[in-house]
Image (tube, rainbow, N blue to C red; front, side, top):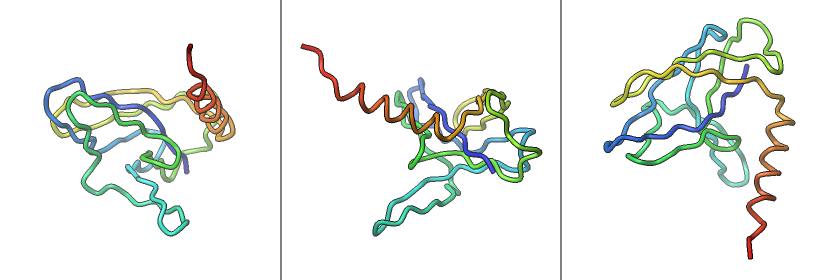
Length: 122
């Protein structure tokens, strides 16, 4: 199983919905949301897709929205690019490539980003 993260921006003037993703590297891809409830993190699929309001950006990231790549056709290798087709209600299909990173690298980048946000300019 693999997890996919990305940023989706709706440059249009109407809300769109991210409805599906597919890749030849996995039997199925589903859109999930992580939810913290009573101190327990759980995941649930978004059966109706992920709404992206007009002019806004939605980030798929750890502990939030993400893609679950299920029944991978072989192990993922760090540095590998994964072709993916994204489908939307209200927008054209998009083709993207995700780059495989280790979860340690992703966690490190998030910490680095938080640290950068903590520094102000005078």
